[in-house]
Length: 190
Image (tube, rainbow, N blue to C red; front, side, top):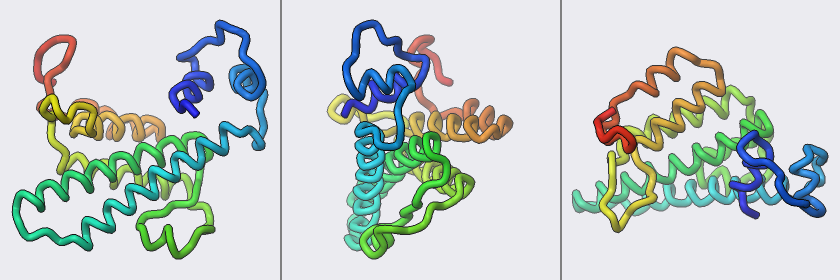
């Protein structure tokens, strides 16, 4: 399922301009229930991201590299995984409130049915992951690595998460953070 289309249909960012059929028409018309196939697919896709991020973090700890260059790369990969895990939890908590919170790979493989965490616990975990990612992710990548998570992406998602929680002061501070990235439109540093 195209998650971008899903989120666009549930927001004001997309307008139904053609006749949609079946399940997609129900989404576009806000006439759907918990049995909606796309909701199940979205839930599964987001938890797949979380599982894979937890695997990356677990394997990175187990690997324990000795070379400094390897340590730097492993730290970057873990930070990228934390960014993606925070992104997945952001969508889960935004749509469903409190959800099962799998913080580690071991939790994932030993307990498939953990109880729902509170929304506040999920938001706190998102904030922690994003702050961890901010501390490690680079400002930019070379052309070969475009599209990877950056410090600016982690900062923007953290700001958005804070706004969703109505933490206006911290959200403003996150938005004013100097990531060192060039502002694309103005060509100046933020």
